[in-house]
Length: 114
Image 1: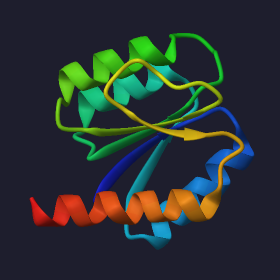
Image 2 (image 1 turned 45 degrees about the horizontal axis):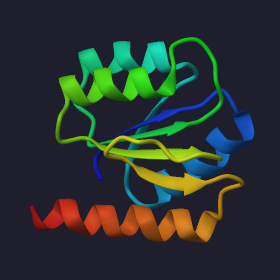
Image 3 (image 1 turned 60 degrees about the horizontal axis):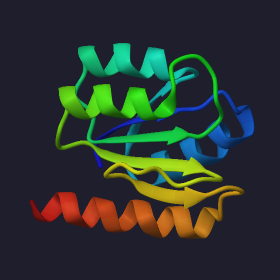
Image 4 (image 1 turned 90 degrees about the vertical axis):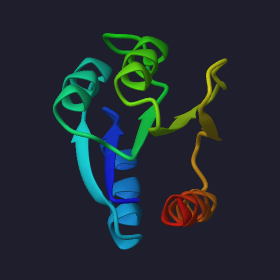
């Protein structure tokens, strides 16, 4: 994955996932609110969006819908306690970092094939 947008207002989650993404070769931008993630997606093409479930400001579901409209090929990974009814990968919280790493690696392999 070349460009990844990580959206969370949880500093521990951001720190953990940011390090893993960088180690896996991704360039990572961060947003602390879904509305900021939407603004950033309007300005830059991302290969992936990782967004957590904490409710703040614009809803996660609405942010994902807007970003998928702008960037239909983006891979979305939702980190949370619930799953979404949309076309996204879901990872349960608290997050298993090894499972997250393997998910990122498999997505990276899919994108290198295409």
